[in-house]
Length: 181
Image (cartoon, rainbow, N blue to C red):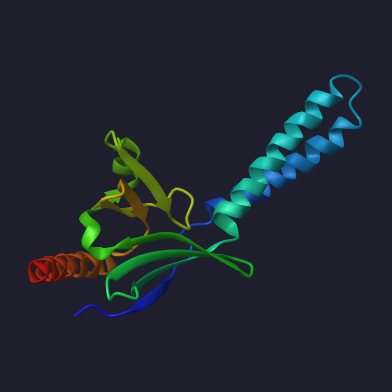
Protein backbone atom coordinates (compact mmCIF):
# COMPACT_ATOMS: atom_id res chain seq x y z
CA UNK A 1 0.00 0.00 0.00
CA UNK A 2 1.50 3.31 -1.08
CA UNK A 3 1.59 5.91 1.71
CA UNK A 4 2.17 9.64 1.44
CA UNK A 5 5.20 11.05 3.25
CA UNK A 6 8.02 13.55 2.95
CA UNK A 7 11.77 13.31 3.65
CA UNK A 8 13.91 16.36 4.44
CA UNK A 9 17.52 15.97 3.30
CA UNK A 10 20.72 17.25 4.83
CA UNK A 11 24.15 17.33 3.21
CA UNK A 12 26.27 14.32 4.17
CA UNK A 13 29.59 16.17 3.99
CA UNK A 14 30.84 19.74 4.39
CA UNK A 15 32.73 20.03 1.09
CA UNK A 16 30.33 22.66 -0.25
CA UNK A 17 30.59 24.87 2.84
CA UNK A 18 34.40 24.61 2.77
CA UNK A 19 34.54 25.39 -0.96
CA UNK A 20 32.18 28.36 -0.48
CA UNK A 21 34.23 29.87 2.36
CA UNK A 22 37.53 29.30 0.50
CA UNK A 23 36.17 30.86 -2.70
CA UNK A 24 34.85 33.89 -0.82
CA UNK A 25 38.16 34.44 1.00
CA UNK A 26 40.17 34.11 -2.22
CA UNK A 27 37.76 36.45 -4.04
CA UNK A 28 37.98 39.16 -1.37
CA UNK A 29 41.77 38.81 -1.16
CA UNK A 30 42.18 39.14 -4.92
CA UNK A 31 39.78 42.08 -5.19
CA UNK A 32 41.60 43.85 -2.34
CA UNK A 33 44.98 43.03 -3.90
CA UNK A 34 43.86 44.45 -7.26
CA UNK A 35 43.81 47.95 -5.78
CA UNK A 36 47.37 47.58 -4.47
CA UNK A 37 49.26 45.87 -7.31
CA UNK A 38 50.88 48.27 -9.78
CA UNK A 39 50.43 46.14 -12.90
CA UNK A 40 47.58 43.98 -14.14
CA UNK A 41 45.16 45.16 -11.47
CA UNK A 42 42.26 44.59 -13.88
CA UNK A 43 43.26 40.96 -14.45
CA UNK A 44 43.64 40.35 -10.71
CA UNK A 45 40.20 41.90 -10.07
CA UNK A 46 38.71 39.77 -12.87
CA UNK A 47 40.10 36.57 -11.34
CA UNK A 48 38.69 37.73 -7.99
CA UNK A 49 35.28 38.16 -9.59
CA UNK A 50 35.50 34.65 -11.06
CA UNK A 51 36.05 33.28 -7.53
CA UNK A 52 33.15 35.41 -6.27
CA UNK A 53 30.82 33.98 -8.94
CA UNK A 54 32.01 30.46 -8.05
CA UNK A 55 31.26 31.12 -4.37
CA UNK A 56 27.75 32.40 -5.12
CA UNK A 57 27.08 29.42 -7.38
CA UNK A 58 28.20 26.94 -4.70
CA UNK A 59 26.10 28.75 -2.10
CA UNK A 60 22.90 28.74 -4.17
CA UNK A 61 23.31 25.12 -5.34
CA UNK A 62 24.59 23.33 -2.22
CA UNK A 63 24.76 25.47 0.94
CA UNK A 64 21.50 27.41 1.00
CA UNK A 65 18.82 25.02 -0.36
CA UNK A 66 16.90 22.44 1.63
CA UNK A 67 15.70 19.48 -0.41
CA UNK A 68 12.56 17.41 0.18
CA UNK A 69 11.63 14.11 -1.47
CA UNK A 70 7.86 13.52 -1.29
CA UNK A 71 5.69 10.54 -2.14
CA UNK A 72 2.22 11.91 -2.82
CA UNK A 73 -0.84 11.51 -5.05
CA UNK A 74 -2.15 13.88 -7.72
CA UNK A 75 -5.84 14.81 -8.11
CA UNK A 76 -6.49 11.65 -10.15
CA UNK A 77 -4.93 9.36 -7.54
CA UNK A 78 -1.69 8.73 -9.44
CA UNK A 79 1.24 8.14 -7.04
CA UNK A 80 4.07 10.62 -7.59
CA UNK A 81 7.64 11.26 -6.54
CA UNK A 82 8.11 14.99 -6.06
CA UNK A 83 11.45 16.69 -5.43
CA UNK A 84 11.16 20.14 -3.83
CA UNK A 85 13.78 22.74 -3.04
CA UNK A 86 13.40 25.42 -0.38
CA UNK A 87 15.68 28.47 -0.47
CA UNK A 88 14.73 31.02 2.16
CA UNK A 89 10.96 31.38 1.81
CA UNK A 90 10.84 30.34 -1.84
CA UNK A 91 9.79 26.76 -2.53
CA UNK A 92 10.33 25.29 -6.00
CA UNK A 93 9.19 21.94 -7.39
CA UNK A 94 12.16 20.54 -9.28
CA UNK A 95 10.80 17.15 -10.31
CA UNK A 96 7.38 15.50 -10.46
CA UNK A 97 7.25 11.99 -11.89
CA UNK A 98 4.76 9.18 -11.62
CA UNK A 99 6.02 6.20 -9.63
CA UNK A 100 4.85 3.95 -12.48
CA UNK A 101 7.33 5.72 -14.80
CA UNK A 102 10.35 4.57 -12.76
CA UNK A 103 11.86 1.70 -14.72
CA UNK A 104 15.06 1.06 -12.77
CA UNK A 105 16.70 2.12 -9.50
CA UNK A 106 20.45 1.55 -9.20
CA UNK A 107 22.79 2.12 -6.26
CA UNK A 108 25.98 3.97 -7.21
CA UNK A 109 29.20 4.69 -5.41
CA UNK A 110 31.15 7.84 -6.30
CA UNK A 111 33.45 6.13 -8.85
CA UNK A 112 30.59 4.37 -10.64
CA UNK A 113 28.60 7.61 -10.84
CA UNK A 114 31.55 9.42 -12.40
CA UNK A 115 32.19 6.61 -14.90
CA UNK A 116 28.53 6.32 -15.96
CA UNK A 117 27.61 7.63 -19.40
CA UNK A 118 24.01 8.78 -19.83
CA UNK A 119 22.51 7.02 -22.88
CA UNK A 120 21.69 9.05 -25.96
CA UNK A 121 18.19 10.49 -25.81
CA UNK A 122 18.04 10.54 -22.01
CA UNK A 123 18.10 13.69 -19.92
CA UNK A 124 20.10 13.75 -16.71
CA UNK A 125 18.99 15.46 -13.51
CA UNK A 126 20.78 15.59 -10.17
CA UNK A 127 18.82 16.49 -7.03
CA UNK A 128 21.42 15.99 -4.32
CA UNK A 129 22.04 18.38 -1.42
CA UNK A 130 25.65 17.24 -1.09
CA UNK A 131 28.61 18.28 -3.22
CA UNK A 132 30.13 15.03 -4.52
CA UNK A 133 28.29 12.52 -2.27
CA UNK A 134 29.72 9.07 -1.55
CA UNK A 135 26.48 7.19 -2.32
CA UNK A 136 23.59 8.01 -4.65
CA UNK A 137 20.82 6.19 -6.47
CA UNK A 138 20.14 6.57 -10.19
CA UNK A 139 16.46 6.38 -11.16
CA UNK A 140 15.76 5.64 -14.81
CA UNK A 141 12.36 6.95 -15.85
CA UNK A 142 10.44 6.63 -19.09
CA UNK A 143 7.23 8.47 -19.84
CA UNK A 144 5.49 9.47 -23.01
CA UNK A 145 7.14 12.89 -22.71
CA UNK A 146 10.77 12.11 -21.91
CA UNK A 147 13.36 9.57 -20.89
CA UNK A 148 15.54 10.63 -17.99
CA UNK A 149 18.06 9.57 -15.39
CA UNK A 150 17.58 11.18 -11.99
CA UNK A 151 20.27 11.12 -9.33
CA UNK A 152 18.95 11.17 -5.76
CA UNK A 153 20.80 10.99 -2.48
CA UNK A 154 18.72 8.46 -0.58
CA UNK A 155 19.45 5.58 1.79
CA UNK A 156 18.98 1.87 1.09
CA UNK A 157 15.64 1.56 2.90
CA UNK A 158 14.13 4.51 0.99
CA UNK A 159 15.40 3.04 -2.29
CA UNK A 160 13.88 -0.36 -1.49
CA UNK A 161 10.57 1.26 -0.59
CA UNK A 162 10.69 3.30 -3.82
CA UNK A 163 11.24 0.08 -5.82
CA UNK A 164 8.24 -1.55 -4.14
CA UNK A 165 6.07 1.53 -4.65
CA UNK A 166 7.02 1.83 -8.33
CA UNK A 167 6.22 -1.85 -8.93
CA UNK A 168 2.89 -1.44 -7.17
CA UNK A 169 2.14 1.74 -9.17
CA UNK A 170 2.90 -0.03 -12.48
CA UNK A 171 0.59 -2.90 -11.52
CA UNK A 172 -2.13 -0.44 -10.52
CA UNK A 173 -1.68 1.49 -13.76
CA UNK A 174 -1.85 -1.71 -15.84
CA UNK A 175 -5.03 -2.78 -14.01
CA UNK A 176 -6.63 0.60 -14.66
CA UNK A 177 -5.65 0.45 -18.35
CA UNK A 178 -7.27 -3.00 -18.65
CA UNK A 179 -10.49 -1.70 -17.04
CA UNK A 180 -10.74 1.15 -19.56
CA UNK A 181 -10.93 -1.15 -22.58
